[in-house]
Image (tube, rainbow, N blue to C red; front, side):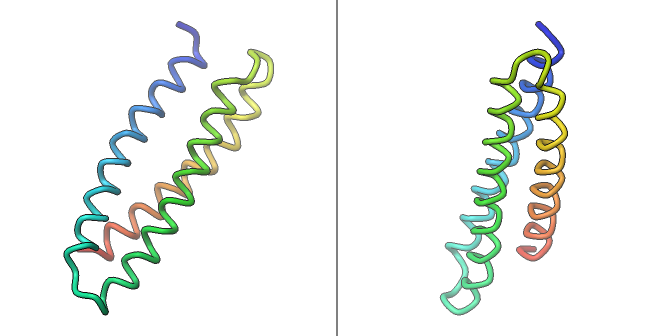
Length: 95
């Protein structure tokens, strides 16, 4: 298995963990009363948008040629940090 494949597998595994965390946050939002739910759903919407961006960036890395995957990796790392930040701030607000 090449370096690119290992990189993609590691990131897919982390995304699976984050997807589970996002589902838990969604469950908390569903249990909240109607009025306080609006901010929760705003944060969840941001999470879903950023998660989609990361998934798309990861697919670009996965499909890139051996010569070009490193350049796609830079974009993925930026998107990755953005998702991590949104997830951390959303988790903090839900507690």
